[in-house]
Image 1 (tube, one colour):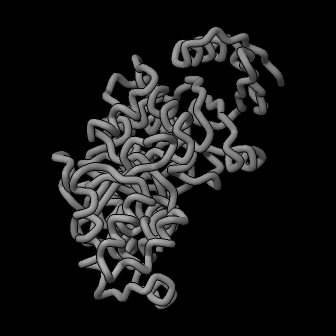
Image 2 (cartoon, one colour):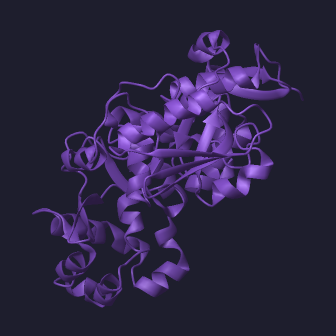
Length: 371
């Protein structure tokens, strides 16, 4: 059955509206914490890219501000989408952690056998972890030493000595701990419930609809396949659950026709979407920026198929009107922009954006343009 649509827009309009929602065109004046909240999550595997993703969305910024926000608790960092580290908003990050916890991976027979922790052991294990972190952040090794003081967890010390990369993930999903500032080049963890901005992990059936609304308000108009990609594939929430949450929120959503594609936005956003005008704004984005990761690299309206491999390989991107049209790279003080699109290269706008990048980085850059 075809879903009736209530409005029609072009993809240029849709991407312009999305650019405004993601603080790219126009660039926003919001705080670091608000940028992270607006995006839902910022990939933190590469700290320099994460900071640039935030700073490029702010009219005024400074180096180290994302790390400072982590230190003061206005943002948190945890394992989230696709098992990777992400910066999240303490106010709303719990909705994504609730979805990530839904699969209860720690109850799998393989986990029980390998770690020697039955599902019934986890409440006490989690409590012991929180207790160990009460006096301040610990490295993984230090946390293992503290837990080894409990007879029931001594067998886990070798796991923590080796990094406990998999075992610690559910502890962040369930809100027991989050990343703190690194110490001596080592990652440290802190109790999350000591952050006064942290409301806890909400109930799953409350979190699901909230996550859908948040996604559509930043990455809409989006299809239900996009929602499944972000919340299902990204957080392992399960297709049936996501379908149920979509059904529960259906009355709050409006279907719009985007050049033959039925996509959805939250009802309160329809008027601003319809009022959006196509943009030709040029932006330099870091590799794996949320602009491309949110809809997924298979979304041809943002990432043309011929450029998908570059995007997946973490190339720094030049977008024009929201579409990936080229790449940029730094080597010393030389900034090379490689133009990949059929349209006329907007040299003036590229020079303006290169000057903005130089200002963000605090460096003099020499621009080199390649077609």
